[in-house]
Amino acid sequence: MVKFSDIKEVYNQQQEFFRHDESLSRELLATLPVDNTNHALVISGIRRCGKSTLMRQHVGST
Image 1 (cartoon, rainbow, N blue to C red):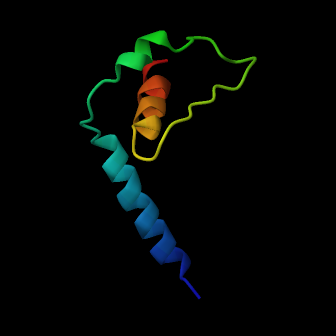
Image 2: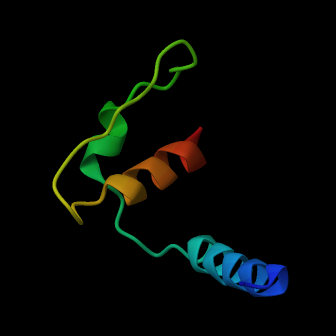
């Protein structure tokens, strides 16, 4: 069984990784809707094309 403290440590390490995001700004970011509170925003694409980075930048820009 995995200890809760081990899970917490891994989680904290991942959060530290996301705080220091030095990724390139995505060109598509400017085309995303600013107010999407009434609808879900779906980002699709092939593996490793930057979907997660785009979403992090979008959430961070609002």
